[in-house]
Image (cartoon, rainbow, N blue to C red; front, side):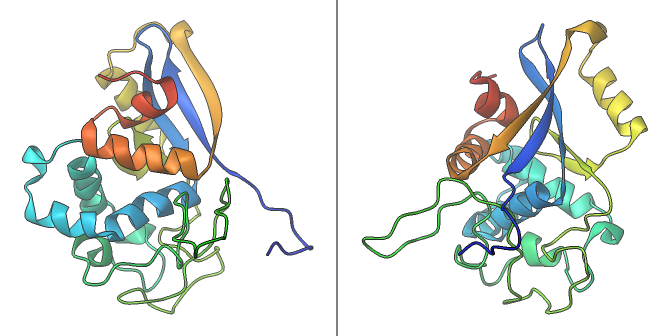
Length: 210
């Protein structure tokens, strides 16, 4: 039930699109979306990724797994350890963290069409220690860059320039910024695309497979 003191804000993602190539170069994401991606790794798929080598992993989950492993501990919330997602023992249930995923509702109940950020209660390996930044998994003091293949890194000017160079973007006039709202349908599409392709954001938001 929504609190009358505050209106829920839909989760959004800012995409940088190469119109000429019809491809998402990267997305600028805030803490809630990165928390959602980490939540995906707390699902049984995280265990699957651990046992399957990243290079042979179909889709972008191997990339996401590797980038979480490379993400500095300074970007994690106090008491949150990357090993929770890289080597999960007990999954965080959908009722704990509904982030962009429909919860398993009892018969006769409806699932909300749009989710806002909800910090998960501590469970399993997740510590009860939280900061004043809204809970969740990563710190909200910085924005993050999410690549088309779901690699995650803290946002910086150098990282953005490097990504543009790596994407062979020479015509900056072909770049377009687009803000998209995220709901549970998009969350399911992201999960499905992550299992099938390395061009996850392009597939989901531009409807184009690599």
